[in-house]
Length: 128
Ligand SMILES: [Zn+2]
Image (cartoon, rainbow, N blue to C red; front, side, top):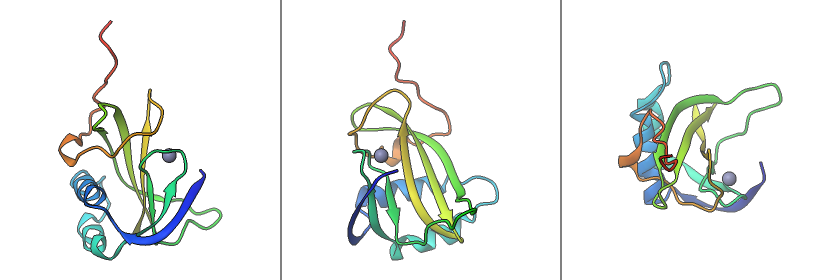
């Protein structure tokens, strides 16, 4: 994916709240308390260039042949009413990437509020 490099900054209120909520939905085996403890020290250093609100943190990227570790796999609804997927990734035990993706919309869109996070995809398809 193409990224936009930004001046390192703390997570926004919305990013922090969403990541914190996603940790409530951490997959089995993920160390949610350890990741929660990292939040205050994380800095956003890259944005997705596509116009979605995905952000990358100041954690090393996967080396060739290494995979990101999935920490959470959930869904949310953006302020625009878009149902989106939410993935939280770590590398080397440290949060690395908050990924959002859409199934039937195009960016730009904003981050879902933490209260919308669910393990169930809330389809926003018009009833037919
Ligand atoms: Zn994007």
